[in-house]
Length: 126
Image (cartoon, rainbow, N blue to C red; front, side, top):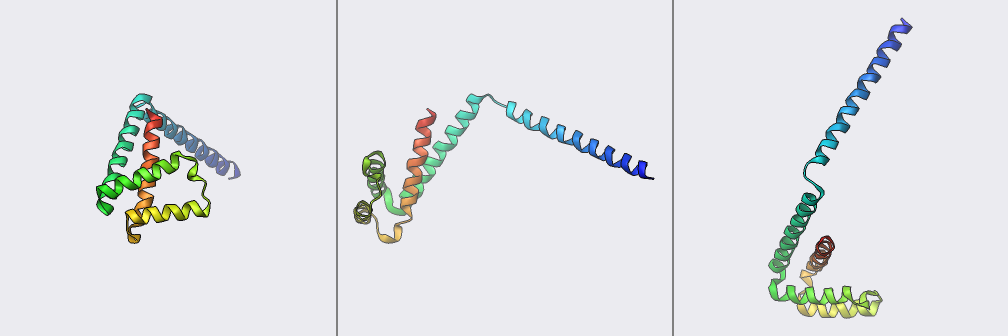
């Protein structure tokens, strides 16, 4: 009886291995679909969509005008050396930001940063 139990266990193990191999082949097939160029194009397209959606969300929250001002403000800050986040520069930034938008719209800032990030990704891809 020992032998047969051992025999069934080993055949189960063999079955498992065969199934694993099939799964791996499936994954490889998916990778073959479309060349790397297609992937980059799709990715850029998705990024572009995300950029447009983010812009639309910001404009909806604070309007086109405020969006433009915030965008320029944060972009110049992220490009310049002033990203050094000492408390004075953060306080200055807050003052400028809240001249552009009301306090209750503060969450729009994270969208503007997201927008800058997404655009940075797009530029890298081109």
